[in-house]
Image 1 (tube, rainbow, N blue to C red):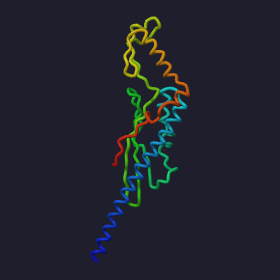
Image 2: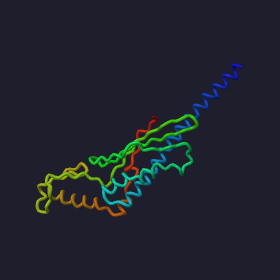
Image 3: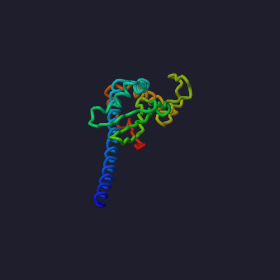
Image 4: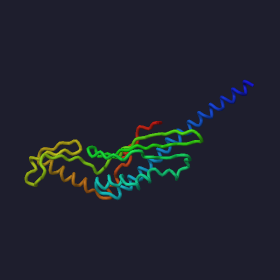
Length: 192
């Protein structure tokens, strides 16, 4: 009788461990599906926007949130994906930040998983000048900071100013050349 009881308790323990591993795989897998949905949406936005404000505004809409939370095309059952906070826009660093929470339910067992997301705005560039207006004849007194570089003399500034304008007015072909995996970062996966 004790052997049967021992076997029964061991099989229950094994079953619980198996369910825990299975739920973790489903939870982290659903976050990976959301990650791929975000990559698809970012690619769409890059093809249809041309400046940082348009880029940021797309992510504030409900269409973006509903598109990335959709895991119905996968074969995952009992999964609910949620974005618990508003998307934060960091205008200093050109980042959009938010969290993903995936809730997995298997019978009476429920587990939640969380990951953080950063989306770098590729149209963002930090430009600081000493003067409010830059005239063609007075650019020798202007200091510009662009992507961590400091330019003080007239020749470098003029050339870099032209290059900066070219960066801001990307063609559709150049936009498609962005490395989307460098724009989107999903990090800090954890069970909560």
